[in-house]
Length: 318
Length: 318
Image (cartoon, rainbow over all chains, first blue to last red; front, side):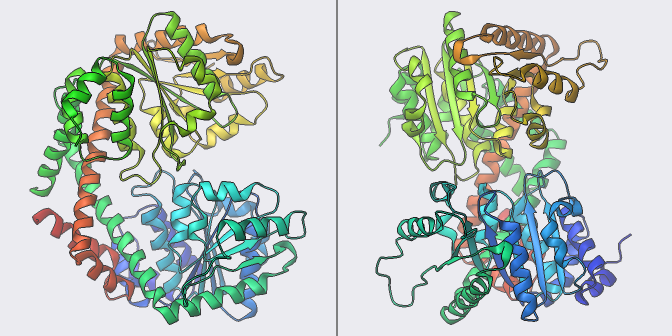
């Protein structure tokens, strides 16, 4: 039996074990989540969330760690959520490899958590925002959401942040990869990491060209800056924080923060609603309605749309 | 205005342009799909579908092409569906690069089609089975479904086939990658391609070990065979076809074909039903119900579960 009120109270006080426990509940889609989220709701909306995404090898983990250090120097409480949708490993398993992150392992003002969401009901759209709520209610000023990989779902998570950082590195043919993955459209800020390597300027130029940053914009439009860093040595990281703060100020000024958060909440509500509806279909499946329809579709007696109509009718009158 | 009955009739006669047109309707989630699928239903259930998956570089495209040749020698009409969930390019774009496939470009008994499904409503679970229906109704005896990439959704598509082939190549550390991606569980047949390279035997042995193929099984259980090929030279491909036919016979004998097709139909119906429900939520979104709920969640007035409850209530009484 989980004592939700106590757990929530402890998480609000920033007790790491309680925070970790609540995120595990999210990860496991525990039945207590409903109660947890209701208890957390009044304490959310404070944290500034930054999404970090980019191809493997650009130095996402190193950059995240460097950003944690930079924000700690500013006295901020920082949360890190590393989301790996393809990993079957959960909890601390991943972070064991992330040597850089261990710099912060003993800092009580830093919460680091990896989350595996493969195969979860409703997927990432559902789980990541709830983990953010936990870190938010735990008093984090800034939450860095690092997505491991470059699939569509990773891009979606990173895009849901208040500010989205797209990382690249020289000489990886990243530009084209990024464009293909639809990653360029979501960047509020671009970081060319490993800028001490050959080709960093070329990468920045190529990016500048692909983004059309040279073109005229409307006054008041946000112009995504390109920052060069060597995250492993901390070079350029303060400039990234500065650019993040500028974007945040711009969002505040133009009402963009409220718009993004409203959109994020809408996506979250929709994902939970769809998971609930899917669960009802699952119940019907148990009731053999779906199985009977599938039998008829499999032999060509009924088409899948006709079958879906009957399923939805059964669902909405149940 | 699309003349669906004529298009369906032409597709049934195996006219390539009509088949291509119908798959484009699937790809574009055209409103006519409902009518198309109702018209096609009585002519489906004939084709044997084979899913092919594996990491980039194992030779999926070459293997697919070699299998097409092998089935053509047996006088079969063959369909190929290459699904790339991450590609923003649709239609023929991808196939332009697939030189091997051009061996079959002028064969009227071969239908080759690539499908980009990125960003589609309901995603792959929804689109791929409907494209299969089109090829099935067009009289294909065998349909090869090749998935480009190794993400979760690719694995799901390949797993939905009557028989699933997992491709590997020597010396790519594939074993571990495959195990991580959950790819081993779905293979009914394993192909170690590029078997003229060093390490092919080691890869086959490793695979044999990971699959526990040495262990005792129940009588009647299917024991996934491992076939070595050099697809670029056609070596071993007849053995693959032979193994495929054996698996099909085993499915027939044990009732597995009906079970798989029923499951595939159930997934398809569920995906269409969820897309329909999502569209209703979208309508509500327009009606500002979701927007109003999102406003309250974004400021912490309401938790996302409470909001989802109200959304679902609005949906099912509408």
